[in-house]
Figure 1: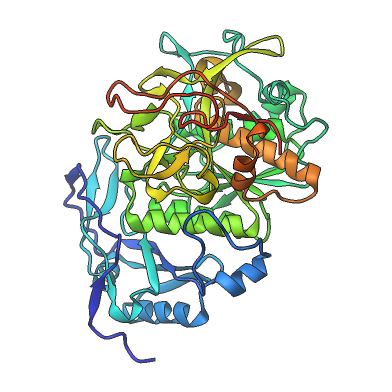
Figure 2: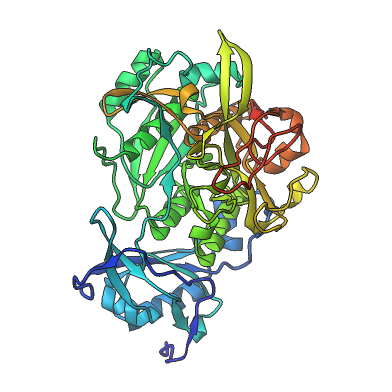
Length: 514
């Protein structure tokens, strides 16, 4: 093949703001890096809310995967710049490359440097836009991994008293996940047998002896759990790593609700490349074939590049097309979503129209009878996320739901969450983390709870329910409405209140079946 030539164009949506940290003078050019190039598909997937008819993995690849010609063009470009091909996948629409940082700088006309955060952790960062050869304009949709800044945060909250973790006995308002499934009326007599639940984790790890002890204490059979490494990340539990709480919460909640399902945990670096690679690997995993995927990590939409929002949303559209349900936490810092600009923000990936966005409530029971359930809002830093996207237009399935314009921009966007369940740490979930009993809440817990429910439903129907949002919005009676509370944070005075029907802090309410 002939060389690409020297003409370059800017990659749309790739602009990255300068880091707020101090630049390090450590040498970077000979450092080895891996990046993922996102390649266009044969046909465009729906960008909003109406995926194609459900397809088998083979049919998806033949209709929507990248062409051999486009992949070959990207590979040729890589070879011209002394970059190695790690993997090329038509179904994942990805080409993974490995090489020296200096080679990537030349290939994509970027300047990369080390920056050190407040804790002394060093990251590779870029500022400005990525450039690509003009012949590859339209072929390359995104380039991920040049910048290794952490992209997301886990959405869990640990219950504490005087700075100490609260154990199960000291928290009478907390719940065993399996008991909560009973209180909520999840389908009885189903364990998720024959299903696979995928869980995306961007840090932390689990200990097998903790899982064995936890499920023994519940008198529930230990689910089959295995770890899959993405981008070199591994199951790495550490008492100093707070992300262990996220990992154990996700596994223990999903496993307690559907102990008959197998659980596959996809560990990936907390970068745009790591997160995207984990999602595409899980959605197109022919070995494990998860029918539902739980994601408890995210960040405000304004923290993402446009190319990332587009590529991630495309990956979620692919999941909908092959019949995989994606459940994602809607956020834990109320309407501000941890942003300090005084505006309301929706959290991504929950704001994708192809995701089941999971909000939070505060649940009070007497025995097994629900006494009250309201929107979770204890403080500005302990409240359910939700709101209206400033990126994704209102999907067709929400046109009659009464979604208001964005409180900050007036944009008529996708509203979230879709459903909600117990998330207040004071009425949270009894879990075991690094050998210690804890009570943990957050919308992080709601995503695996819903994933466990979906696994039960899939077993009951003997097929994957897949993309459930249109079904949910066509039949609001599938949920028990939450009508009290709000997620308005004092730093914004912008937010949303609960009321009859759908609202932007509890969705339709608590889902118990399909």
